[in-house]
Image (tube, rainbow, N blue to C red; front, side):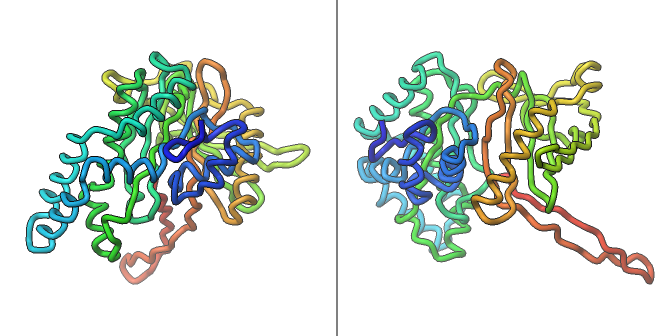
Length: 331
């Protein structure tokens, strides 16, 4: 299936995504492909490449529209209005037949219509690595193609355009790859994060989608005889899927609040993944993971560079108290 416009992110074809690199598949997808090659489980799927984005822009004649709106912004037009005009042009344009066909063929390989997938932006540059669009539980080829086009358009999010202007990046030379992966039913299982901290791995886990403030917390000391410290969080609510293609918060049950989300086997696997990721990227990383409620399998969803604690000094009367802040952007 690998081609100029679509590259597999799992299985035997993973090497092609690694070779394509973040310039073609985006930073998120490239990191996943690298760790998939290391034996870490990622959801089955594919990347729609930067070449597909550029072919779309060329085929639809969007370059002049982009250039015109940027000129108008620099001449005084409101940035929100200028960016919205570009996004509107993207949404009104059709994907080239060759690009759409390859996306549909790749989706058919995952199972075709009726197969639930998630479509996410996979930015190439840090200027575009914002809280990007994600489209959940899509179940048709037409929806997948439409979501890819909307991801392309998100490159002209107001903040992204402003960031590129501030950094002097040419808007006509950027691209937005897209990641399409089989849905992990974390709404029926759990999700959270894992990050290495010196000699142990810190894991957080909540029921449903995302990581709540009152999540379970674990410290795992990897090794032949791992040591696990557990703290059962309150887990008062969880995020689940809601139609159409959204999410909603619901209360957890008393039984869910009383038990831990993860087994010892789960924790050992996540700790191993964290050690492999830190070693592979030669720096601390934070792993976002999900547990499928149907199969019980864990999947790696995203790899983020670890963020060191920042210390702020806050004055109180005549004394100065250190206050630690942890800042981590969920790209």
